[in-house]
Length: 64
Image 1 (cartoon, helix red, strand yellow):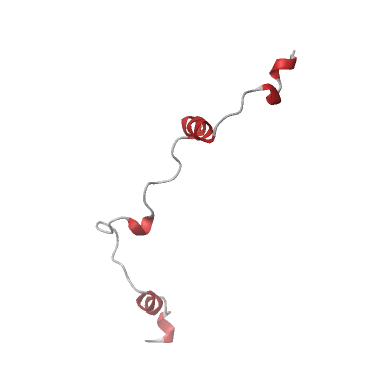
Image 2 (tube, rainbow, N blue to C red; image 1 turned 30 degrees about the vertical axis):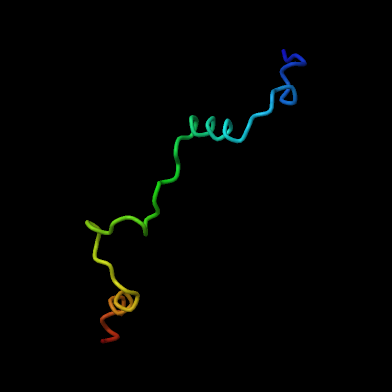
């Protein structure tokens, strides 16, 4: 059974850094430190410009 001291309004205010720390403990670091375009492209497939990709997508019956 709940008592008067159990209501959320009676809890001490949580600072922003305490909230971030608590959420990090629960969920972990969901976002990577770097974005995909910031990472080294070595080991990945060959980069191509948009025109090259578009030319490769033309069906054979349309010719080149």
